Length: 164
Image (cartoon, rainbow, N blue to C red):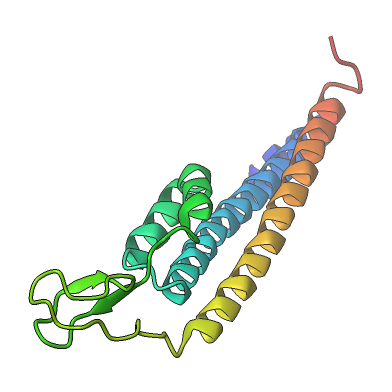
């Protein structure tokens, strides 16, 4: 009985449509997984870049860019170099701007700002993650084009090559 059903599908052209439909679903699921991986990589790149810049809100920027993408990414790129450097008072522990000559709370003289020893490593990691994310975006675009062409070709083969 099932062999008659498969024979009917293949003689009427429905079998090729089912096979191409399964291929398209598989390709779309791969595209979805790669898109999620790309978002995670871009969020991690933003986090590492913010850490390298000494931004106290690095986790926030990584999550915003990872979840919401383009708009927070543009905002981060606009403000990433405009941040002030902070220092911590050695007397009372208050975090204040490095340009202050004295601590605003206790009046103790300011020490030089803290330099992040991992800044170069984090900046390099951010660049690598962005390059990998760019390749994943290119892969998703190319796979999307292949998927669209495959879908149009399967519709054309079922319709007998004519579109109305």
